Image (cartoon, rainbow, N blue to C red; front, side, top):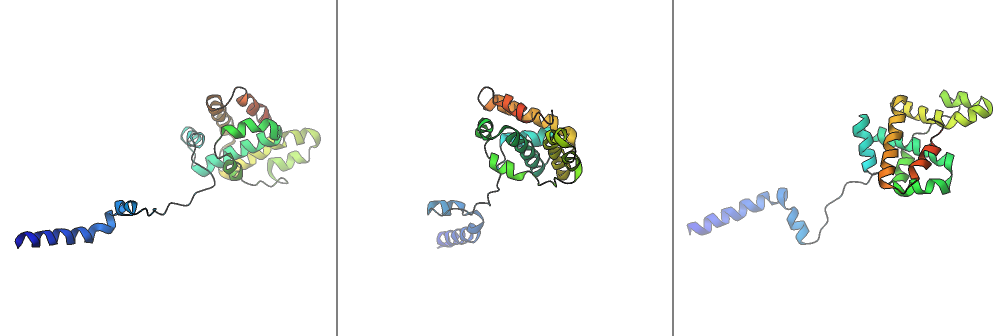
Length: 172
């Protein structure tokens, strides 16, 4: 009788603590755990590298990269930007993470009033305005470009990083 009482006590205590450790039970019956909401961008190697090397948080890294990539996209156009887009996972999220800048104020606003020369430099000024909005020093633009270039040198086809540098010529 003592053995059945001990066994009963053991089963009862197991059942009482089961909700805290019953993840295997859900797996057994095919129930899926609730997954966290997916953000628009992914924490790719590129974003992680920018965060760690430049001491930025994720939204700053994503917004800064998005600003740079938006400039390259607008400078190069779709065909030349394609290899860059194909080499960077989650690029759509990075592009959408770039903050909107007021084209009539800040450095880009001044350049928009400066005629043709100003128009050629306006894209770079928009990147610097976006960096300011994100709380990133404009001095970090060149190191961020170098990180992206290194990433493309490692993960993309030959000449892709050259396309990036051509697309970012307004800030280099």
